[in-house]
Length: 211
Image 1: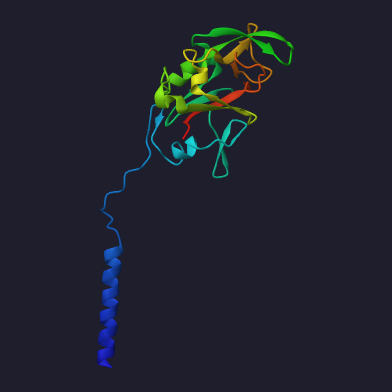
Image 2: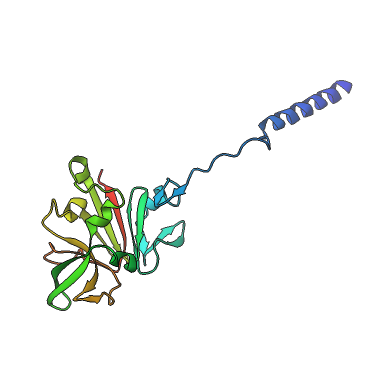
């Protein structure tokens, strides 16, 4: 009987020691957070890094993440992103940049139209896209997304006038008047015979690398 009691006490003491060894000390320093934000460059976190870079499920200018809608940019503006870097542009901020004017055919009005806007390549270089693409840079492409979910793909070389004989603009006015009918901003190219890649009410431009 005494032997059984002694064995039970020994087992209980051993269990308490094991539990104490597995329990972390309250004085142990906390693990540093993985994600940080500095300026417009994001370290890879589930929200701003890999999750954001792979999120192309766009509906009404929102990024669907874990079943919740999160606005990517302020209403009426759009985001340009490349890797972990991005810039958000409102119509007012875009209006302050140097503009270029082009003439394109308006398929709805069945007439020529003068559009004014900012060359897309100027916005891409601000997030780190090389101004002159060569070698592996020629694998870069972009996906432009409208507020209605419409998407169009361009190679980055296509939007660079130093490589391709076309002008690709983020237009904010037509015939001297601000765009209003289909949102304040529109992605347009002068090289399109049929404007199927014209993205109205532009909300998102993501640059990626073809594998």
